[in-house]
Figure 1 (cartoon, one colour):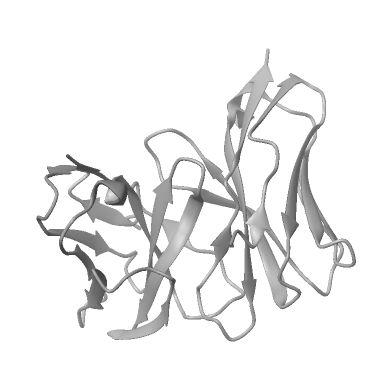
Figure 2: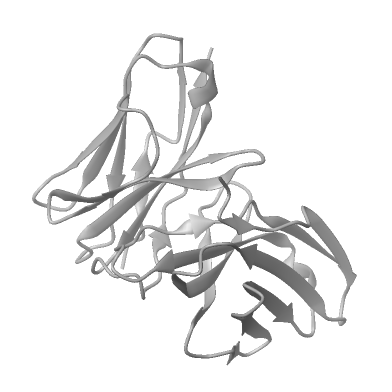
Amino acid sequence: KAGVTQTPRYLIKTRGQQVTLSCSPISGHRSVSWYQQTPGQGLQFLFEYFSETQRNKGNFPGRFSGRQFSNSRSEMNVSTLELGDSALYLCASSPRTSSYNEQFFGPGTRLTVL
Amino acid sequence: DQQVKQNSPSLSVQEGRISILNCDYTNSMFDYFLWYKKYPAEGPTFLISISSIKDKNEDGRFTVFLNKSAKHLSLHIVPSQPGDSAVYFCAASAANTGNQFYFGTGTSLTVIP
């Protein structure tokens, strides 16, 4: 079974631009979560989508948004990029939305904002 | 506000010895805990989990201990192997919050041959 894939793997943008990141979950998984990883902050939860609906949202500004398609693929969008948005963005998939299961992570998209 | 804390950014252990990684949490509603391992340029991979109804869970060389009264969990690796060198994250979640997990900042483990 193929793992979680994320595209692109690396991205360089300038302040003020917007960016869209893509995540394809493991086949059959309906839950996709997004995390931001920065040095010293660990992984910070952005949001979770399940069956095309946002299930949970972390404490991030409205510039961060996402969506999920009928095939469970998900996109994350960041508008009006700031220098502090430079981070590794990880998506994770699970078969269901439940607190009691593991998540399978993709390799991440490294975003650099100049 | 960091609800899950890993206070040791790094740890070095000799091959064959025990590695003990620690994690503290503040939210008493957390009832499910996981450990992930992360190599450079890869996403975290699941290692072991424990629910709050247990105080210990073992899987091969890996054992997780949970002390609910102290809001503390630890991961023991015995014996440690060079391939265990990676960054380890603990994560926690509360019931009815879907897949919203709170992660620690990670501990970088180096196992010296």
